[in-house]
Length: 116
Image (cartoon, rainbow, N blue to C red; front, side, top):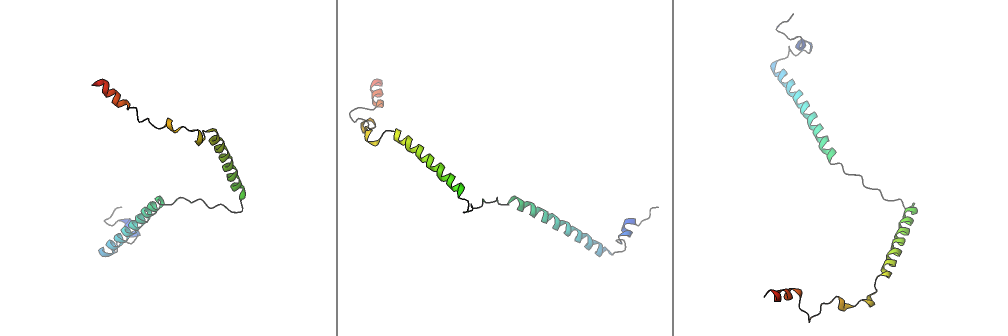
């Protein structure tokens, strides 16, 4: 049995409301949905800007890690000292090997002489 009155509207008593009240109710529902959507989008944007956790400072009561670091650094320095000792000393370097002789012409001028 279908009449001009919607049964659902009667149940929620919307049929008996005036047009202004119906419109204000729709507007209120629209505002609530908009507020929910705005809050959701805000949470989504803020989630992208969560800073990473910073590492905490070491507890001064734990010297074991510090001792390991010092021991490894000392070992590394000893190895570098050995490598440096194997290299030529500054006294044995011949500076003439690194300085170009002023009496000789460069190779470019020699090539130009052959071309001309």
